[in-house]
Structures are given as C-alpha cells and as structure tokens.
Image (tube, rainbow, N blue to C red):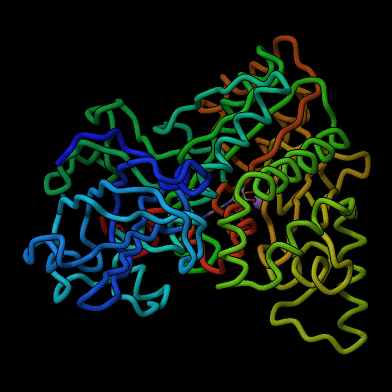
Length: 468
Ligand code: ATP
Ligand code: MN
C-alpha cells in the first residue's frame, strides 16, 4: 500500500480540497451496501462523526472485503470527494484498503444495535469504542484542560499533594489502608493491636481522601494553589454519585474570605461550562439528542443566572415550609440535620430553579478546620448545589486562629500528634484563607447529562467492582 501520511477524521471533514489523495485509519462502525458498492462508516476517535468510505467490491480482493466488519481496524487510501449521501460534506472513494486488525463479528460484543449503558459498563474496555463514550471522554479531557487553563490564567500554582498519607485526621470519609505487611502473619502487641513500626512507612498509612490540608500549606506559602488528582473513599455508598476512586480539584487561596471563595467557585464552574459549550459542541449535540433533550438548554441556563446564596438556616426554613405545604421527603428536616440529596435538589430544582450556594452550616456536621462564626454555632462552610447532582462543590473559609483551631481539634478528639504540621500554618504567620473541593466526575456528570457516575470515568471503582 502506498505510504500517505494519515489525516484525522476531525480534520478531514473540514477540508474542501476535493480530489486530494488522503489516508485515514480507524475502526469500522457499520458496513452496508450491495455487491456493487460498499459503504463503510469509519471512526478514529477524533470526533463523534464518521467518515464514509465508498468501495467498489470488485476492485478489491475478496478476502479483504470479507474482513471489513464492525469493529475491524482499517487503513484506507483514497480520493476525497464531495458527499451527497452521508451526513458529512466529505467522503472517501477507496483506492487501497489494508486490514490492520480484523474483528470476528461472532465474538465482538458491540453490534450495530444500541446497547444499554448497563451492558456497556460490563464491557468498559470496549465501550470506549462507542459514540457515547467517545463523546463523554472527549468532553472529560476538555474539562481537565479548562480547569488547568482557568487556574493558570489566574496565577494559581498546580500543587501535587500526596496520594499516600499517614494522617487520618481529615475525617472526610473512610480510608483504604496501604500496607506491605503479610496479612497471613500479622504482628500484634500485648493488647492485641496490630503494630505498624515494622510496616513500610513505620506507621499506618492510607490513600488520601482529600489534598486540602497539604493544599493549605501550599496556599500559605505560594498564595494560591490548586490540586487535581486521584482521591479515594472507602464508603460503602452504592449511589449514582459516588465512586471509591475519583478525581478532585481543590483550589486553596490565601487572603480571601468566604464571599470571594463563593465568587471563585461560581466563576470557575461557569468557565468550565462555557468551555464545553464553546469547544465540545458536536459531542454535546449528540448527547443532547441521545440522552437528555434539556442538556444544552440547562448548560446555557447556568451561564445566564447568578447562583442563589443562602444560609443553611434559611434553607432549613424553606424545606420546613415545603413540608407544611404538603411536600414529602424520605428523610427528616430539622435544624442540625445533614441535608440529603433530595433536600438539596428540592432547593435547587423546585424552589429556586437555579444553583444554590448554601453557607453557614452547623459546626457539628462540618469538618474541624472551618472558620467559626460569631454565633459560636455555625461555621463558614459553602456547598455548591446543582440541578440533578446535588453537592458538586464543598468548601469553606478556614479557621485562621490558632487557639480556636486547637479547640476544634480537641472537641473532636482528633489525635494532636498527627496535627502539629498543620497547626504550624496558624502558629507561624497565619492568614485568612479559603478553598473548596470540586468532584471532577460530578462536573462531568453535569456537563454530559449522564445520570450515573460510573459512565463518566473510564474504569470505575465502586464497592465490589475493580475490573480492568
Ligand atoms: P457527599 O455528601 O456527596 O458524599 P462529601 O460532602 O462527602 O460529598 P466532600 O468531602 O465535601 O464530599 O468532597 C468535596 C467534593 O468531592 C464533593 O462536593 C463532591 O463533588 C466530591 N465527592 C465527594 N465524595 C465523592 C465520591 N465518593 N465520588 C465522587 N465524588 C465525590
Ligand atoms: Mn461536602
């Protein structure tokens, strides 16, 4: 076969130099036609669109024509011509076809007919070859790029916090332990507790549930940082919004208080959504047609409106009034309760009809590091609540006062020996600072309109599932 440099389909479909000889490589999505002509839809992952390859079966050997089946990988040399039949302006009149990889249709699980998302989850190694997952993972890439761009342009430093941690003080969730100990032969002390002095790190270690505490060390030196990395939670919550391994984005900023923290969160999410609308239009259009007819309208809507800013106490009042008005919730509502997703979604979807930033939560249901309000009962927390998702961001202004922070640590019985490095930020040149954590997959859920978090990460890890 003649050697011609490859053109990606995303570039090819924009070209108008008909008559040019081109090469494309990709996987067969469908093949139809007759003895006289074969129409092959080829996709190379660069775009949701297929390129149509038209071949005259009599011009190729029989064996090659037989191997052009759904899933096979081809390299095609041909002439770029104007298309009338296909959805693109361009198609390829094949001159040479090489089968790079054949695909036995009797065994290949992906057929022309649509498959359910549940079925495709079982075939996560191959679902990447579908239109749906191609669209989702191109969007996911774009969101990662948007996030780095947003923070870089604002002068934030990308700061890598540890994935293995020996501090168990975050309290954000159950942790996965990391050990090289022989589990069949565990050394124990007189009281029957496992000893860790002989373990790899000389103490008990786990996978991180958040990079925030180390992020604060970065922010109180570099001014403004963000983390963007894998995060692990061993909670046995089998919901459509929780993963055991997910990616979190955690900006942390010196010299800002809760108001500016809310401004940052709102600007940040709007920037990402606008990026998707500007740069992922083809993929969004596909998802809008196939899964969620409201998707693009919902994304555009987010950009137009200011997020509601409301205190937890006012939020509880609205929920109580809703109950008085006859609305039924599964879980009880009272001041002090940790809101369930149904409560969050009521405020966002039914009461206000736009995103809500809920602030000033009771200290008992929030982490020790949040700044205490004057009332002594609430802390400067801020959760950003989104339609269809519930909590997408959790953040706060941090307690900058050494004594108050120490007090909060003691109140919660957090072991002090683990915390001295963190307290040093308040001991040596403390400053007001704030930050938040965005669950990357929750953002992707929102932007793609998908309903299950297992469908927006390539290889989901959930209780009982670590395939691939
Ligand atoms: P939730 O109440 O929804 O379980 P959380 O309050 O435990 O979340 P935070 O500790 O505030 O979560 O973490 C910050 C953000 O990380 C959350 O707002 C959410 O977007 C995301 N997040 C938290 N846990 C998970 C998870 N298990 N899987 C995916 N994303 C998560
Ligand atoms: Mn939270």
